Every structure is written in C-alpha cells, then in structure tokens.
Picture 1 (tube, rainbow, N blue to C red):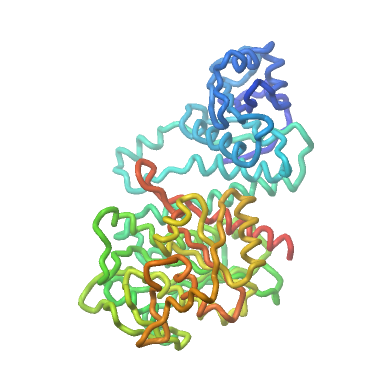
Picture 2: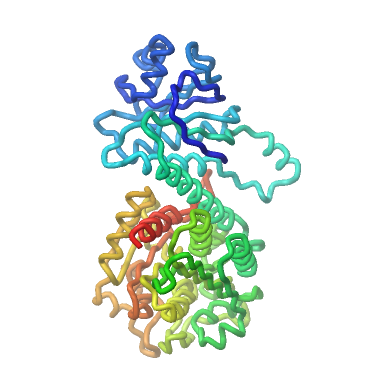
Length: 500
C-alpha cells in the first residue's frame, strides 16, 4: 500500500473513494464541511434525516455525489462530539479500512486524520491512520489453491491512499505515516507466521525467516543448533524439545543502529511452533489453535521488521528459543528434574507449562548483553485469558517504571496491557520437595506464578513480561493471528529511540 499526505479541497480531488467523518447530531469536521458546501448541503441533509447511524464506525456509502469529483463518498460516523476520543477515532478508521479493503476503488482519499482529537497531535493521528488502514488490507491466502489465489488477485481494495489534512505539512508528519505503515508491515509478518500451520511454520522456518530479515535489513544474526544449545547448558529449553523430531533452534538477532556504547534493549519471544502439551496432553478441542503458541516469537520478528523499516537509531537484541512440544518416547515426563542454564533445578510437574521452560534459559542468556531492559513476549497462560479476557495483554515486571512506560505506550498505540502484581508471597507456590522450584504453582494465580518463575532468572536487569495468550489470536469466524503486541513494542521502541 502506498501512502501520501496532501492539503487540498476534498471536493476537487479525483479519486475512487473519498472518506469523510461526521459526528452524531450533524456536526461536521472542517474537511467534511468543505465538501458539504460543494454539494450544497447534501451531506448534512443525509445525516439530518438519519441515513448515518450515530455509533462511531457506522458508514454510509454515497455513489456519484453531485458537487465532488470522487466517484464515491464514504461517510463514517465519529460518534458523539463530546465523547470523541481514541477509541471512537480508531473505530472510525477501522470501518474505513474495512470499506477500503472490500470496495472497488483502487485509490482513495481519507480525511479522518484531520479531525481534532483531545491530547493527540496530527502526527499521532496520521500514524494511527496509516497503521490501521494498512492493517485492514491484510489477507492470508498463502495456502489457497492456484484458482483461489487468482481470484484473490482480482479482489477489490485500494492500493494508493492519500491522507488529507487542512493544516501545514512537515517532515514529522511524513515520519509518522512511515512509522504507521512500518508497524502494519511488522504486524503482517507476525500474522503470516502465526497463521501458518505447525507442519510449515517449524523452528527451522522461524530461523529461515529471521535470516531472510537479517539479509534484507543488514543486521547480524546467529542461529544456534541443538549442539550449541547443549554447550550453553540450556537443559530447561532442551527438556521441551526432547519429544519432537523437529530440531530446536535458538535465534539471536542484533540490530545495531544506536550509539556504539548504548546498552541494547532485549526482546525475547516464546517460539513453541506447536504445543500438544507433551506428556501432559491437552484436550483435543481447539488444539489446532496451538499453532499460535509461537506468536511471541512472531511478534519479535515483526517488531524487528518494523524497527528496521523505520530505521530507528537504537540497539536491539532479539532472542527466540524455538521448538515443538510433543509427546514421544524420549519426551520429558511429569516429575522429571532438569537443570537450567542458570544452574537452578526445576521439577517439571506439568509438561504443558513448557513456555516458561524455554524462556528461562533465554532470559539467562540475555544477561551477557548487559541490557538496558529485557521484555519477554509469550502466549504463556490460559489463566491470563480468564483474568483479563482478550482486550489487554497481561503485564508483570520487576521494575515499576518500566511497567508504567509499557502501559503508557500501550494506551498510546491502542495495543493495551494491564499490570498484575509480582509479589514475593506468590513465590512460595513454586516450592518443590525435589528441586529448586516446580514449573507450576497450583490452581490459583496461574499468570502470576508463571511470571514469578521467570522472575527467578531476571535478577540481573530490569525486566517485563507480556502474557499475550488472550491477545495474540482470535477464535471463531475471525480466527487468525492479530499481530499483537507489535504496535505496543514499536511504540515503546520509538519513544526510547527518540529519548536517546
């Protein structure tokens, strides 16, 4: 998708689709009012008689509206004027994105970013617009037959987008659009990887994808094989890989665009490319969705792509421990004791609590980079979905300032997180009679005890944990990966790069 920014009279632009906003009650933003004047009040008349619903995101398509040069006009409701905020703005953009992706117009002009929004400047509005519109065009058809692929190529959808403003243009606005588009591109990669089935998106495929990214954007990469992982003493990680025929991979990426002596930020992504539960086998219902258990890894790769495309001046390390978790004659059994890279021993009470077993060794490995901070991303616990649903990601951290920063960037990006406590009292639930700790903490507070487990391996640096079990994918008719938390991580890194 190609984006440009323009200042012009909306009625005079020749385009396949002109997207205008309107508030419930009939109040018109500046650009919509300008177009309405050219139509001799036709837009206001349609709104007044009730053709456009009041709810933010409602739409009304008007073909061949006299007075404007666009072939079609799409009116999008912004909701009530006195309630207009981030959510209503995103709902309006989402509705526009859906129409743009499904309609016959090959080019479009979108005037929504010009609408004033409390506490948000034009750069923020443009970044959101570019990201949401580009993300709305996402399709996953890689596994369709040739016939379906040919049909998909004939599908509708705008490819050239003009974001219309009434104020002055500047370099910072171009940067904002570039950022929004880059974030959507990173989300698309994360979605593609998540949507691939486990027989195709193997640990080797993740490693190949990372290597292709490194070649494209010229950053450093190492892919450690089983023998390398064994030499590092990552017994916890390898215990998960014992039951699968797929070779495990430990992917280490280095993006170095910051100051030479600046400490890197480390992102760690859980890369379980299929999670059967191992010997502690999961129920059969919806087990197909366990192909999404590598969405933490996918989001790290997507974030690296977004960061590289933006050219952020920052130092970034990405760590991805990748394996399947399968039952088999060599698989780790409940009650087995394994030794982590840190030297701490773990009693594996449930082989389906495997994500923390691969992450803990990656978190120990992260110490060698003397990081500014470490953020791990993992589809870790079903308990997080029960606690928070599918709206925010769970957030736990050993540093409250880092947690607050992530929450702030989540609110800013619309990819929200919610902090849960990481109190020492919960550590008692991980006691084991036979090892330094068990890998589960019992029935209660499952998301917290999982993070408490990880916290034992993160004492050398500032660390935050994002549990994305509820936000990484959708079920039902809309089944598929969401690309979250790429927007949150990108917003965090943009802010850190700006501060540096």
